[in-house]
Amino acid sequence: MSTTTHHLSTPPAPWKSLFQAHLSKMPSPEFVLATLHPAAHDGPSSSSASSSAAAIPYLPRARFCIYRGMWAELPENKHNDAPMNERVYESDLPTFTSDVRMEKIPEIFATGPGHGAKAQSQGSGGGGPVEAVWWIKEVGTQWRVRGTAFVVGEDIEGAGDESSGVRTVKSQLGERMRVVKPDGEEGWSWATELTAHFGNCSPGMRGSWKNPPPGTPADHEPDEAHRLGQKVTDLEDKIARSNFRVVVIKPDLVESTDISDPEKARRHRYTFVSEKQEDGEMVGKWVDEVLWP
Image 1 (cartoon, rainbow, N blue to C red):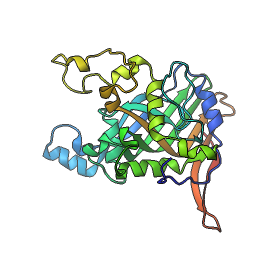
Image 2 (image 1 turned 30 degrees about the vertical axis):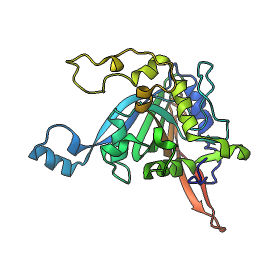
Image 3 (image 1 turned 90 degrees about the horizontal axis):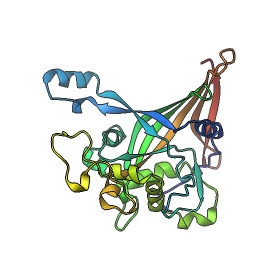
Image 4 (image 1 turned 60 degrees about the vertical axis):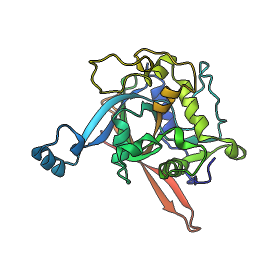
């Protein structure tokens, strides 16, 4: 584990077990992910577009994604042949996978504190605001997770100096990774966790990261390496791995709105706060409010 990581003393989130129990009832844990898209980059340039961008710098973007478990807690999968880290950490950080060529990745970089350019979004980093929403009709409950998102790419470990993006990811996520096996920290690897997520996807899903570039005109057939419908079994497939990313949400606010019984409907709002103790140590905790829905 990199020494750039500091772990904030934080108890398990009070919402986590119920959230996971509810998701287990879904046929597929799909959710809507909302990001912010820089308005100046949306559509052809014009004076009216420029004035609109000045008034409204960002536009909303939403799409469906698949929840892939909490970071550092990848679920066991008998079909996953990738090496796995030991369960050294636990977290309350939801994950999903993406293609770096999708618009959501540069959006997460551009709206973060560093306002990263598209070229920077090819590696690890980010920090832009996101909101994820699940409607679990099986239990009549909506879950909303609001926070910042960080992208884990191939550069997360390797030779040479770490980029500022890699340092940011390890610092921001690491502070919310709780140690459950202290003697295993030295052997835990960010790169192994990334590969394990790749292996956790089906061959067809892995093949989608070799598709033609998303959003480009379909008036020409792609080359053989980028044709649709490929199945990838090689965990180190060069093209698929170069486009594959794990995105981790660091929640600041979580809400569950239970309307399964109209006479008892309630909304729980959990807000993450950190406080400095008398000894100077920073301690995190979740504050739970019960609200009318």
